[in-house]
Image (cartoon, rainbow, N blue to C red; front, top):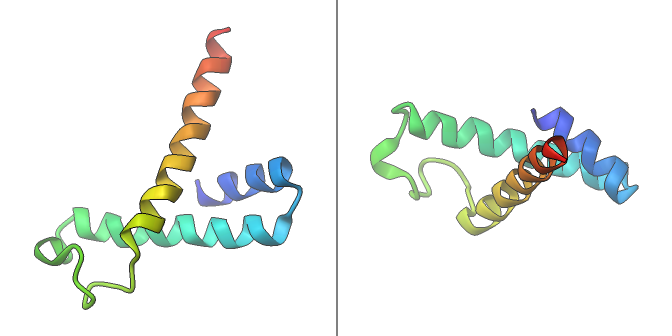
Length: 78
């Protein structure tokens, strides 16, 4: 998923370097919060001992990815 989003960002923004960094950020979010959701640190979601996370930056990235999903769903219904 992260590679697909990074590829899409590269075509939209015409900047493959930035897209690669954003793809890594998406993969990081997936790995960290998936671990949290599946019990590997659930009581300490925002603890510095969990991982060096920035919840607002991570949330903004998730919102951007969800925007792609909604945009694609809308295009499929037209």
